Image (cartoon, rainbow, N blue to C red; front, side):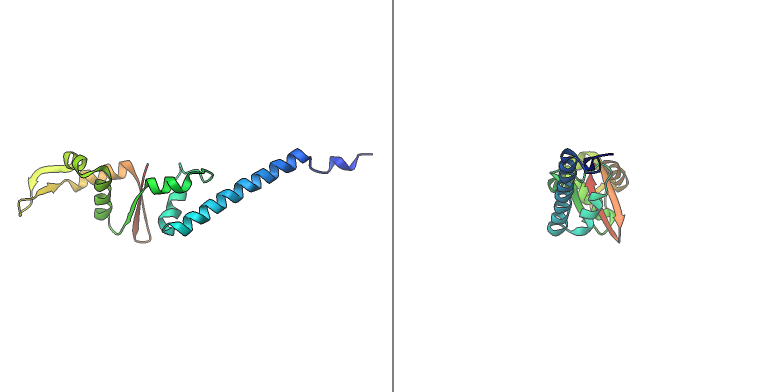
Length: 134
């Protein structure tokens, strides 16, 4: 005849289960805090990036660091990227020798946009463009 203790979880296994539940509760609380603190649309997109670890204790800080911005057009998004890399750097990389009719220098928007898309996660959804560093 078998003892009843064979069917009861061991105290060790029960503690592991409690620890796992606590860890999941912390993750859920952190994500809920992110939705409460930040614009929900870009935060939701950030959570879906392949390299984002939902159990990262610094998840909210990483969102702040990696979210370049959310924009209404690709031109605005590219300009946001140029501002992010710094205008001095951007000038050296994407300013052409040509000038506008007003005599101002021209930007190579095609090259800048290609660079931007290679360097960043660019997510277009719901008429908005959400941009994150890789």
